Length: 131
View (cartoon, rainbow, N blue to C red):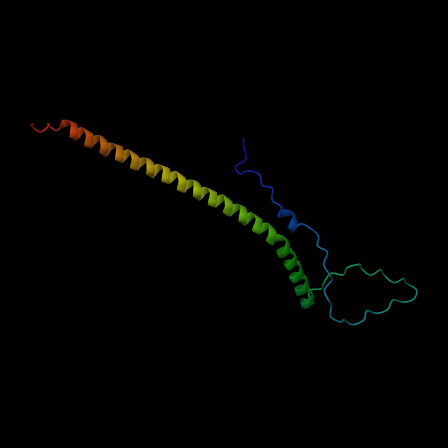
């Protein structure tokens, strides 16, 4: 059984699953963490700290950067698809106009032929005037 919809090669799908390389948001100054005692080794700092919920400016900066990146990448795809859709729509409209024009011209020719046949029949059935 065939699928109800044809498969789509949607280049936009990977956009939502890609890992973006964005600059880290600027974080507000926080209180310095307590220094570890000399007997314990210092814990390794995470390579990319995630923004904390209370850091609204950082979250908003990250959100804006992600949104701008997505828009920059999606806009050319949308323009390409819109252009292709418009080309298809214009081609269909031209085909419809040409079809309707052919139909109308055919109807007009048939009507003209009928009128001419009626005129000829009337001329032939008319008696000739006396000489």
